[in-house]
Length: 255
Image (tube, rainbow, N blue to C red; front, side, top):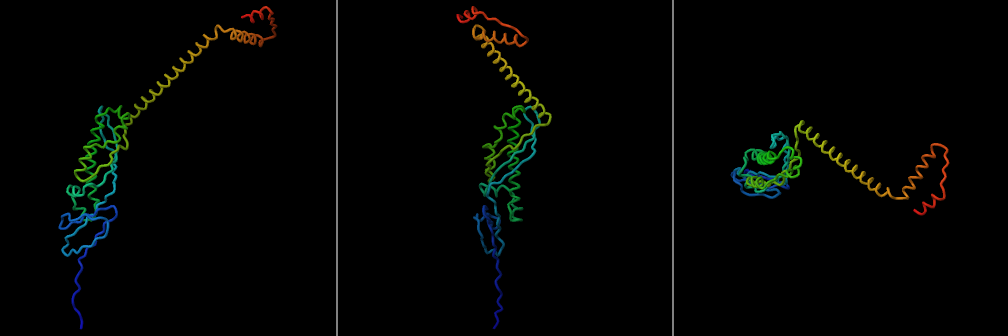
C-alpha cells in the first residue's frame, strides 16, 4: 500500500545577526523585536517577517574641501572628520527612509542618509565658528577650534538616534597669496627677535668691558703686566737693551 500524502511545504525563514550588530525584526512592516547576535528561525507562511541588521560599532566620516570666509573675508578651505555610533534605534528608524534598507537587507543606505544629515549639522556649526575669527588669528586659535563639537550638535544628532562622539578639524588651508604674506610676516618676526638678541648681547658685552676697565685702571699689577707687554712688543721689533735701576725696583716694592 502506497502513501500518496503530500509533504507539507516549509515556510521557515532563517535570519543571521552578526557580531556587533542588532537585528531589527519587522512583522508586517512594524518593529517587532530587537535581536542580539545569533541565528533565528521563524515560520513565515504569509511573508510577514523582515530583518534589518544594524552595525553598532563606532563609524568615521571624513568631510573634505569645505570653503568658508573668515571674519575679514579671506576664503579658506578646511577638512574635518566625525566619529559617531548608533544610539536609540527607534529614533533612527523613525527618522530615515528604510525602503532601500529593506530591499537589500542592509543598513548601508540608512547610514548614507545619517552621514548626509550629520554633515549638514556639523558644517553649519564649523562655518559659524571660523567666520567669526580674523584670518590672522586662526593659526593662533587653531588648537581652540580643532575640537568643535558642541552640545547643540550632540542634541541634534541624538534626536535622530545618533551619538556624535567627536568632531575634529583635520586641516585648514589659506590661499597661496595669504600663505606667502604669513611666511613674510613670520620671517620678519624671527629676524626682529634675532636682531634684538644680538643687540642685547652687544650691550652686555660693552657693560662687561666697561666694568673690567673700571676694575683694571687703578690696579698696579695690571699696570706692571701692561708695562711688560709694551717691552715685549718693542723688543720684538729689533735689538734693544733695557736697564731697570734698583731704585725703580725699590719703588715698585714700596708700592
